[in-house]
Length: 505
Image (cartoon, rainbow, N blue to C red):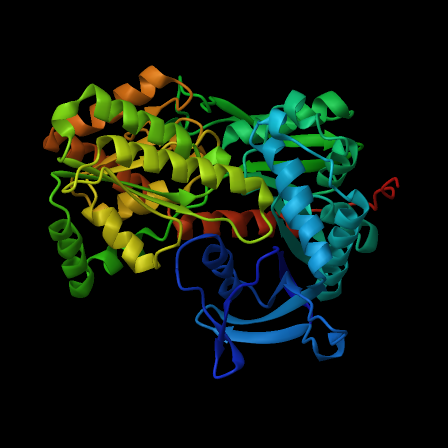
């Protein structure tokens, strides 16, 4: 039976565990995050399918590969189509081309861009395989919803194969200015594919404006409609602030809708989880295990764009500048190591580990270690307990599409005191105006931001946190789901798009 909504994302919508020699599929351990957010759409439509990749078994055992499975879980019943990619395809498509060439451009680090080891023909072929699988799943007039930059070429292949479907694309990442994007030698192919979409989504208005500027500069595209950005999301005077944004483009007689809606967190779920008696006891346990007056937490993964090195340098300056804090403050850093094969992040992880060692060696004593670093992930509930126990959450990426950690920290504090120090270059910064917003490229601003957080009176902390909590409660994951479902309904009501010309070799 064909599906009215086909979600195309490289990750599978479950976790695989081996029990008694057999592979068992389980729901994601964290009920918050991108995958659970997308699964929230499954019960809202007549029938849904999910297209992802799975590493093909080696040794010529592809006949045993189960390409299609039916999943029944708390989100509903849906089909999962797994593309059997070889280890070589995965390495080139994801570890090399996506991470070494596309990712630094998306994050506006053109000096880190490298196409030396890229095989674009292989990247294109993987995208074609995703498109073919999606088209085989889609009912007449269905919405095929494609996620993230490593599937940039899927829209064009879908448009060639199925003129009746509606194509939506969502960027979980930043989208750079046109001059940075144009570093990519495949810029024309990528842009033309995105312009085959009916709907192109971003987290914040700045990214939508960047895309519109690129399209207008490179193609005969006209912006036919702009709207005012909602006042609570304008972030006037900050790095990503926008007062107006383009919402409709015109190209060769057809309209393309642009949307900017930051994904929400499951605020109610987080509040309920953190209030459970065993979790409140765990929070108290964490507080008792540290003798320091102030606990600062920073949760993320190893990536040069996450600004972990810059944060650690700011913490080092803090300890030099304010020696009275020695023994009274502790920084808990989780920088989850990248998966095997992600060689682009090895140097970033080494830099983090060396810097933590230097700071602990210089300032630490037999009774006090300034930083605790972990490169392994914590469970979701354990993470929430650390958020709740922490006095300050320090999230200062150099560039980030959104950053859900900031919203999770707020929800975990349930209107109590606490301070969020947040980068202006995180997409979440446009809506979390009561955080201590900072430019992470500025040494003086980083120093001032952490001082402000440490010295903020409790009543001001509580007032800010209450306003932040109200915002994430209003724009939660259910709001995001309703918003997108409304746009999908509009797409289905619109005339079908004509078939676009084939991609050039």
